[in-house]
Length: 164
Image (cartoon, rainbow, N blue to C red; front, side, top):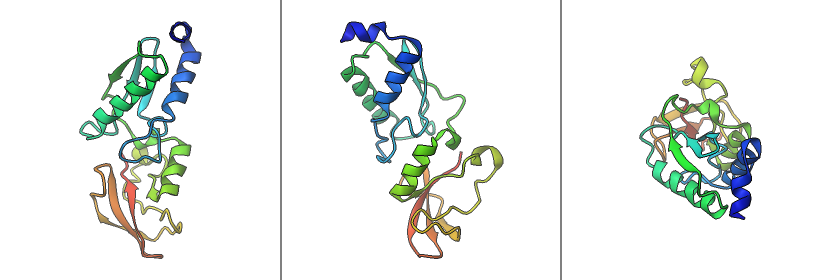
C-alpha cells in the first residue's frame, strides 16, 4: 500500500488527500471538515498546506494532529504539514457544502463574499427559521470565530460564523 501511495502524483494525489481529509472534522465545529472550512489550501507532492481560520486559533494544533493521523493511516506519512498564515484565511474559503452543514447544525454561516464586500454588519439569517430579523448579542460566541446572536422572529439564540 505504501508503494502505491508513493506512486500517486499530481491531481490523483490531491484528489485522494482531499477525500481523506473531508472526513477530518474541525474540533470546535464537528459538523464540518477541514476541507469544508477551506483550511486545506494546497496538496503538493511532498506537503499539505493548511491555513488556520485565524493565527491565534486554539484548535490549530488539534487540527494538525488530526490531519497527521489521517494521512498516516492512509499511508501518506511522507507528506509534511506546512502551516501558512499569508494570505490570511477568509470565510470566503468555506465551501457551499460547508455553509449548508453549518446552517443545518444551527450556526449561521457568513454571507458569501462578506470578507470582500464589507457585509460584516449585515444581519445573519436565523439558521433555525430563516428570518433575517436577527441581532448580535455578543461579538464573542462559543468559540473565538463565532459571535452570539438572537433571532427576533423565533427568539432562538444562535452562533454566527464571524466574517473575515
